[in-house]
Image (tube, rainbow, N blue to C red):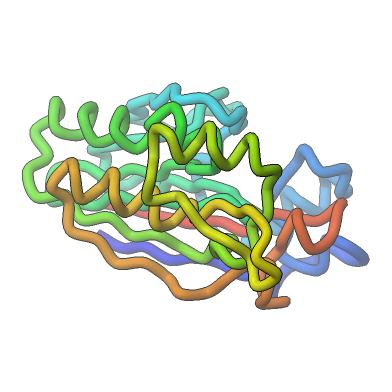
Length: 216
């Protein structure tokens, strides 16, 4: 199995999307985005909608399916999840792999749990989680009321910014979910808002999307 996380280097987009923007929905030139995607080889992307639909795919689909997680048991298929502050979650095992989009909504609707349960139903035994670069708890400022709503169900998400305002720590909340599901994990320490090598919706809008890629 193999996996990687791209950054914003190595593509053909310009301006706010410079240079390896992989998203077709952010008003970048579609022809250039297709060119960018082609540098990665044949990859199955998703039309992500902050839901908790997770699809099992056996072959490459001609159009991006609408969902927030993809699973495959096909060793010839590479899966992708696109982000620009959300967590690109890759789940790996000997039997199946998954690419999952986990933002604030994904924490609340437990999209990772849905993906893990579907992988286990396919026979996946020891699943290891890889959390790619995402916005950190010190940078993800949210209104106090929203923070309290999320923390009521996911206490590990509690955070404050450097200015002591209310925030959410999405990676900590996701790790708590993964540990509860008895998964091993490793998590990137890179913050997308702080590191200009990555696209960040919070830092600049419009912007592009980078990706987590996984193959069995």
